[in-house]
Structures are given as structure tokens and as C-alpha cells.
Length: 86
Image 1 (tube, rainbow, N blue to C red):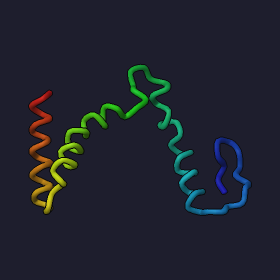
Image 2: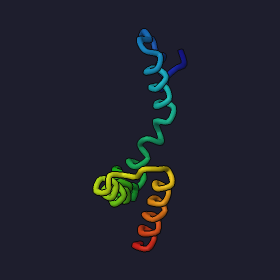
Image 3: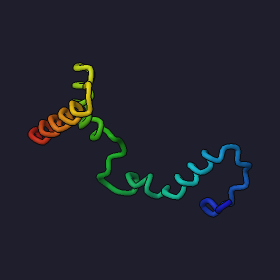
Image 4: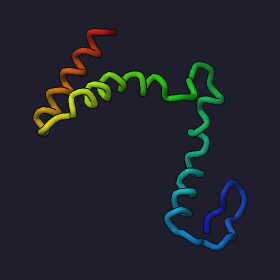
């Protein structure tokens, strides 16, 4: 098994999928903590959640859409509204 942060993984592999996921995370570990090293990067996703909130509220109050065409129309409409608000 490949070394991991200088240590060899010597534990038995109980779940190959979990082992692979852990190895993938370790490979990009430095990028996962970018917000700690750089000033100005927010450690939360509040901005993204705030941007999606109007669409989620619309979907809940209007019971979603009935077709792909309706979904595309609403997505475009909400994009126009958000563009005009900024």
C-alpha cells in the first residue's frame, strides 16, 4: 500500500471503498485547509447557501415544476432576477 504522509498504512483493509476515499482525501489534504492559511477566505459556505435560498423557497412554496422545460424556465428566470439584484 502507498505511504501516507510518510507513514505506511499497515492496518487491515476492511472496506476498500473507504480506504480509497481516505487516500483520495489525503492526496488533496493541503487544498482542504486553504481557508486557514489565506486571509479573506471564509471557512463556511454561507455565501453559496444565501445565493440558493430564494430558489429553494420558491420551489417549496410552488411545489416545484412538472417538466424539464419548466425547470429550465425557472432556472433562467431566477438567474435574471439574481443578476438584476446585484
